[in-house]
Length: 334
Image (cartoon, rainbow, N blue to C red; front, top):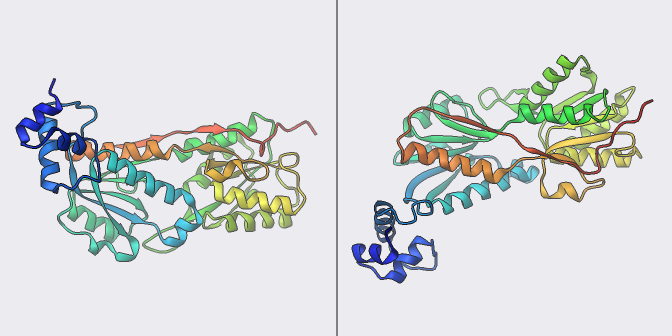
């Protein structure tokens, strides 16, 4: 097996320099060409092959999430940071492009892209002209041309419902957001609401009046919709499925303000497991999305396309796990 000394002898640099490059020491001042040469020789000599990644440049990170959306939902900020960290660990050089700058800011020299957010039909066509290698993260809008990795929201919604059914709940409501079509700007039903309606319908217990949604997945939206449910529903469901943790946090605020006991009178279950979920009152039962695994999978998919020359597209769905806290309770018989 090749050693650092073998690599140093071939590239003509010191053992110390080679070691620091292979360990991604950012304090080391060497040219990009030097780094590329060292990684290429390490790869060819099969040095610690599982840990050394060939350097991949000119990858566009298309972050089509507005500052407001990131502020309202920490999910996106966490995802952005996880993608950037994972890319760094895999020796993938990302250049960030934001929605405000437009798709035309992306150069035609990119090797591939990672994309987060919603894109118009015109933007999709532009991407196809820019590169045949790309991965959509958190959505799968173009499976004919590109890879995608996202949490399996249909599975998670069914799991939320099953969790409540197993605890005796039959009157179950839903509070969520809507998807804004980037071409028409019209609000459309989100995948979680579709899944809730379908699964509850199959169970024969869907109550349309207890399904409340409007644009946005913010705390404010959850608060407003929960107040609407409290004020307008003749009988409040004994449990609610929330589309996302920020919405659930707002729901808990509204229920607490109204003096409605959680989970004594109303149980709440959500999706994501953001850091604040265990600190709200009461702590929130939720399904954990492993964003680190989502991002690792996205990078691996991109490398398969660029390095291994895979041409068939893949869509990967990742499940999660329920983190049970105090916002859900087994319902006693009436």
